[in-house]
Amino acid sequence: GSTIGILGGGQLGRMLSVAASRLGFKTCIFEPGGDCPASHVANYHFQAEYDDVEALKKFAASVDVITYEFENIPTSALDILENIRPIRPGREALRVSQDRMTEKDFLTGLGLKTAPYADIPDAAALSAALDSIGAPAILKTRRFGYDGKGQARIKAASDADQALADMKGAPSILEGFVDFTSEVSIIAARGLDGSVACYDPGENVHRDGILHTTTVPATLPASARTDAVLLAAKILNALDYVGVMGVELFVTPQGLIVNEIAPRVHNSGHWTQNGCVVDQFEQHIRAVAGWPLGDGTRHADVVMENLIGDDMSRVPALAQEPGVALHLYGKAEVKAGRKMGHVNRVG
Ligand code: ATP
Ligand code: MG
Ligand code: MG
Image (cartoon, rainbow, N blue to C red; front, top):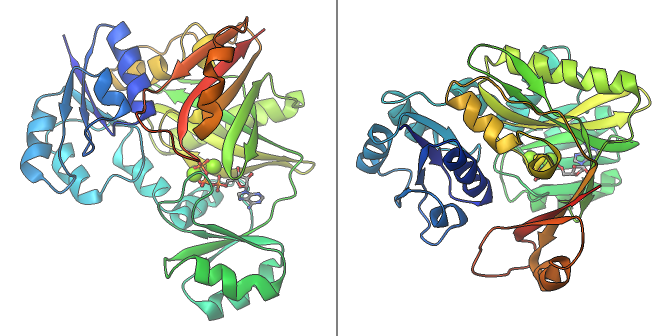
C-alpha cells in the first residue's frame, strides 16, 4: 500500500491520518515535537527539525506523496522535499498564503474583493496608510499569525503607535475594518484531474480571535452561495491546486469579501465529519492521492463548537448529550486558548 507523508503533527494531521488509514493508506508524520496529537495515530513519526536535511530526505523517500497541515513550512525544507516526492497542494499555494501581502495581491489580481490594505514597513507608512484607508483598521503581522495572534486593532489614528509597537518589529500589513454582517467560510477541494467540489458554506462566530462555532447551513442569500463557490473555484484553478482549501469570507451588503485563505483542511470544515458522507479530511487525502473526489453533499444540519482550554471540563456532560459527536485531540496538557477538541451537534 501507499504511504502519505504529512508535515505537522497537530490535530489536523491527526484527523488526516485517521482519514487516510480508513482508505487503507499508511501515514508518516514529520514533526519536531514528541508527544503530539498526530503521533498517537500515524504509523510512523519522523521526530526532527525542519533544518535537518538528512531527516527530511529520509522522510520524503519513505512516503509516496507529501502533504501538510500548516502553511508555514520553511522554504528550504520544501526545496529538499519536492526534489524527492510530489508536494500537494503545490508550492505556489504555500508561497501565496505564507504572507498576507502576497495573498492579498494574489486575490485582488484575480479580481476578488479584499479589505483595503497597505504594506507597513515603518511608522511613516502606517501614518500614510491610515490617511488613505482610514480608521477603524487592523494591523497584522504579514507572516505566522493565527487565532488572531499578531494583530492590533486601531480604533483611531491615536492608537497607531501602540499598534506598531505590538508588532514587535515584524513586517506588517494594515487592513481597513470590514463592517460585515456575518462571516462564512467555504471549504473547497480540487482533484488532480482539475475537478472542483465545494462543501456547503458554514457561518463562523469567533471569540477572542479564535473560531468558536461553525453553523451549517449558513444564513446566506442564494446568490452569495453561488458567488462563494465561484470565487473558491477561481482561487483553486489559479493555483492549479490539489487538495482541500479553506476560504474565509466576510458577508457584506455589497457582496463577499475574502478575508484569508488556508491551503489545508480548516477548523471551519470540521462539521463535515458528521454532516457529509465524505468529510474534508478524506476529501483532502483523496485529492493528494490522485483519487476521484468524494461526495461532500451535506446530509444534516450541524453546529460545530470548538473545545478550548477549560472547555475540556465539559466533556463528561457532553458525552451524555444526544446528537453530539465528540472529537478530542489527545493533547496531554490543557492550556488557556489551546484547541483541545470539538463537538459536532447534529440535527
Ligand atoms: P485564523 O486562526 O483563522 O488563521 P488569523 O489569526 O489568521 O485567524 P484573521 O482571520 O485575519 O486571523 O482574523 C481573525 C478574525 O478577526 C476574523 O475572522 C474577523 O472576525 C476579524 N477580522 C480580521 N480582519 C478583519 C478585517 N479586516 N475587518 C473586520 N474584521 C476582521
Ligand atoms: Mg489565518
Ligand atoms: Mg482567519
